[in-house]
Image (tube, rainbow, N blue to C red; front, top):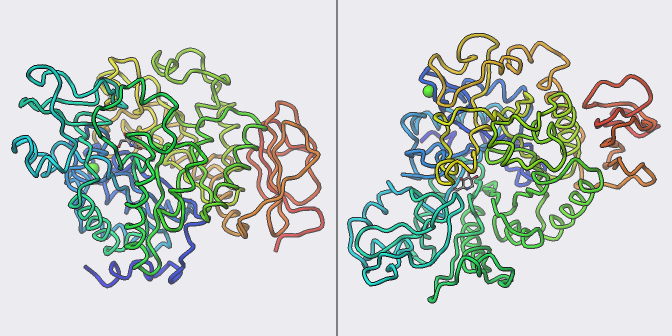
Amino acid sequence: MTALSVLGNTAAGLPRQDATWWRQAVVYQIYPRSFADSNGDGIGDLPGITGKVGYLRELGVDAVWLSPFYPSALADGGYDVDDYRDVDPRIGTLAQFDELLAALHAAGIRVIVDIVPNHTSNRHVWFQEALASPPGSRARERYVFRPGLGEHGELPPSDWTSTFGGPAWEPVGDGEWYLHLFAPEQPDLNWADDEVRQEFLTTLKFWADRGVDGFRIDVAHALAKDLTEPLPSQADLEADIWGGAHPLEDRDEVHDIYRDWRRLFDQYDPPRTAVAEAWVPAHRRSRYASPEGLGQAFNFDLLEAQWDATGFASIIDKNLELAHESGASSTWVLSNHDVVRHATRYALPDGTDLDAWLRHDGTEPAPDEERGRRRARAATLLTLALPGSAYLYQGEELGLPEVADLPAEALQDPTFLRSGGAQKGRDGCRVPLPWASHGPTLGFGDELAHLPVPADFDRFAVESQEVDPGSTLAFYRRALAERRRLQTAETLDWLTGTPTTVVAFTRPGGWTSVTNFGSEPVPLPAGQVIVSSSPLTGQDVPAETTVWLWQDGLRDR
Ligand code: NOJ
Ligand code: CA
């Protein structure tokens, strides 16, 4: 290991020992297999990302979050991890990881890696050992094995269903079944087991010692489970009767695990950070985000929000308050690798059933692409104006839409098969990025990509957007550069007396963000415009537009 990677954040390009860098960071999520392909095999890889560090620096992000790059059979896009302390050979090597880390750090960009603690893959050495060992053995204690019901254990221990469809229990042929809240290739770990706890501390230390700055924690709400018999029914699990004592989710004792992790994180200088992927009600989110715990938690409220000023304003208000309560900063997410891209969500009529729309290959209702782009840019500029950190998903800076018409044979998401085609799945937001305007792969390697890049993605190519000052890419670069200059204290003051279609607030330093959600222009407050999500022609904020401006009388510093 080089001195550079041991010292991590002291590498050239990063401020020394800044323990608060994460609070208002712009974090760019990379789904490595679909970002950039360096060797032309159609699979994005770590050297591909290293080759794009200049692109990331120019974009102006503070950190990247790498979705799993570990060895995996890709039963769930890499969230089925065979080995937590290695790199999938199709994606790179540990040495190439160190090179990427050093290159990002030298460019002033921090690195967050994805930790998947709820389940391993079924190819993990522990699970293989469990399968080769008899019921009651030590190897099986690391997972959740239970005897089946029925005379010969031929029935599952309960009627629980998995997130991706189908039963949550899989038989292993000797009367025992194992629990998998996700795909059968993702057996759940038993977090009551000490060795499991120690193993993850070792993994976190492994990456933290290499110089990784933070961690994104997958399914952070489900590690602690109460599997006391008799097991409840699926109907009971879904009933609103559990408070903080649901058998599988959001149990209070999950925070004991994160307190241990925090002790480890705080041994580093600066402390390593973490963000919880916890699908819990908003009022329980702050527990994950507390300074004694992971420190930050995703707020997914905007992923589910309609295009509506009142809805946005109340989500903003509530989340700023929750973040304040927990001592964390808020997080803002409009897109990620699990949801329909926001340029497409906003292109569809409000209230569209996205699953049904995907199922019909995105034909009906037809997306209004122009409207989607306009709203997406306005929503992005609004979230970038907020206190807290913004998590961007690769490709949103190009305005990429969801690819809804991927052929069935190309689909990789286990939800598609396990739901018998009822759910199309998440592949449509995981299509590789178009780097070039020409060629069969649009600059993503030489061979056809692992998920086909639609020919009409040439319209979104980085190559052409880089030279077009009106492009979405140019807009993101501008907005991120301005944000970097403007972000100060984590507070805002709502502007009162604005129309109901408007969300407007001022930030410390004297700048204002105004979003017009309506279809008619509204008056532009007096002041000097800093950046706007769509072109301004007069003294109005046009429909579906966000504008940042200096308050009247205050000038650019
Ligand atoms: C959440 C991840 O974001 C998603 O992609 C994955 O399928 C599940 N967790 C299971 O690991
Ligand atoms: Ca490759």
